[in-house]
Image (cartoon, rainbow, N blue to C red):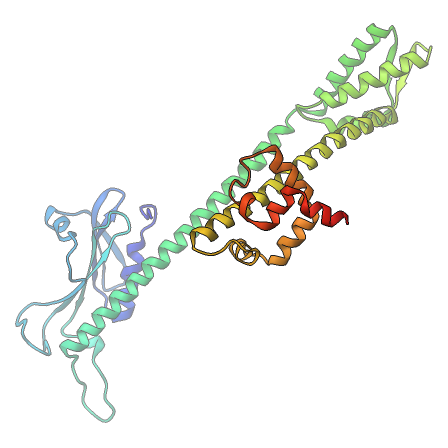
Length: 360
C-alpha cells in the first residue's frame, strides 16, 4: 500500500490530540521528500519542519515496544507528580515498514486524564492506568491507519474506474470522428464508379440518404457493398439512364446479409453446444479422479457430491445426451480416459446400452 500521495500522519496527530485532550504532538514520519518532522502546536495548528536529522532517522528503526512513557525526572515514581510526561507511540509505516513515531507531551502531569471520583478528591492516574491509555491510543491509531488505507484503495479503484470510462468514451468518440460528409463522399465516388461501369446515372433517394447516418465511421464497407449490389440489380432491370436507388433497395440487401449472418450464428451455436458437452464430460472426469484419489468408490452419488450436483441431475443428463457422449468419446479416446472405463453411466453410454434403453 503506497500512501505517499496523502499525508495520513496529520489525521493520526489530530486523533491523538482529541483522545488525550492535549495540544502538543510531534511526529517523525516518511514523506515524498524523505524523513520529516511535524508537530501540533497549542493552537491546534500543524507545522512541518522538513527533513530531519540523522538521529531522528535512527529513531525510526522498529523496536519490540510499541508504546512507552518518559518523564523529565524520577522515572520510578508511581504517580509522576508535577512532571512533564511524554507518551511515545510507534506505528509501522505503510510506506517503508519502519516506525512512524508520535510523541505526545502532557503537562504538568496527566492533568487532562485525571480520574474523578464522586464526593472525593481527584486521583492521579497510576502506571497501570497509563499502560491502558497507551494501549488504547495505539489500537485507535492502527485502526485509523487501516481505515485510511482502505479508503485510499477505494479511492484509487474509483479513480481507475473513472479513467477507464473516460478512455471508453474517448474511444467511442474517435470511432465517430469521421463526419457524415466523408461518408457521403465515399458513397458519391462509389456511385460515379458504378455509373461508369454500367453507363448509368445512379442517385440516392432522400430516404436512402438518411441511411448514410447509420454508417458514420470507419466501417462503411457494408453500405458500399449494399449500394453496389442494388445498382447491379437495377441496371439489369431498368433501361433508364438515370436510376434511383431507394432505401428499400439497400435494406433488401442488408436483410439478405443478415440471413447469411444468421447461418454463421447457427454454426457458432452448434460449436458452443459441442463445447458445453465436452466441458461437462471433463467435469465428470475431474470429479471421478478426485473421488478415487480420496478413497471413495466412483458411484453416481459420490461423483455427484464431487461435482456439487445431485445424482439425479447426472442421470437426467445422460438420458438426454448419451448419444452425444458416445459420439464425442468415440471421436476422442483421451476424453474421460478413466471415467469412461469405470463410471457406469458413462461406460454404458459409450457401449450404447443407454441408447437402447432410451429407444425401447
